[in-house]
Picture: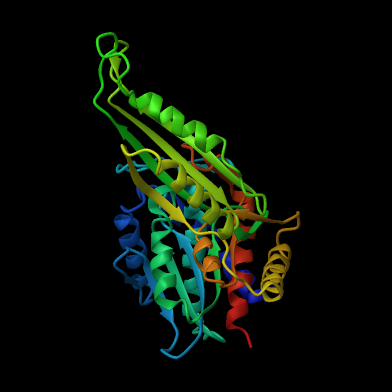
Length: 371
């Protein structure tokens, strides 16, 4: 539990925290275009005397470690799923705050900023090295590249990793990995009557889809595939010369992902006129010390439940934790608010839960700064 003076900080900062959230949430931040948010956060830290850097992936990074220290990483992602480059609309109605990306993940970002500020104000020193990151490229085809850059730099030194993302009632302790492709079939095409019998790109793509939908799906862990979008052809009386498919598969186990990849490659290898483009890759779980990892997760759930009194589900998701988990690093993704409709323009969060989540994050992070 937090000490009284730590809880007092949350109470004192609660109203300002909501105003900061409203301000930050208006700033557009599509994946790979988070520069404005990154600069806003960097300036906010600098105004408070906190040394924050922006790296080549536009991650905002605050280092609290020596060169020879192992480190714990705490992060929240700056990007949202929306392509808007104009200011986003945020509105408050009673105890609810509405707006695209307000909960996913801007509210968690604001909580992390204020916890960092508390640590700086009180000149706290970690029991181990600590790295704070407001990272980029978590959403969609960002492929967690901001987080990936951090983990690949420090993977041999990272002993624990917590991503703050999502809702209070979940603790992600398993990575749902995925691979996403665009397949494009090219052929000559022609007139539907005069050139009847020539290859039709739509028909060829349909054959590929049929084979993919009849492949053997691994059962070692939940494994799925999906045909997300198909386009092709020009008109009713023309043989289609091009057709395009968006295809993905997912699993929580890397071995199952490897099986799906092998089967995918075998199927498409039978077709010489298919262009294959990789759109996104997220790894699944790597080899973990299960006993150590279960203790890590159970401990984090206990810390959540000291302030959030309802059930907390341990679950599998695709989050920034995929990256450290794929390296065998203990990692959880934890939310600090309640809300609904993430990834829509009607997303909302319950401000009654916001202060609870603030305390949860304080409770988790300050564990690393106490003797």
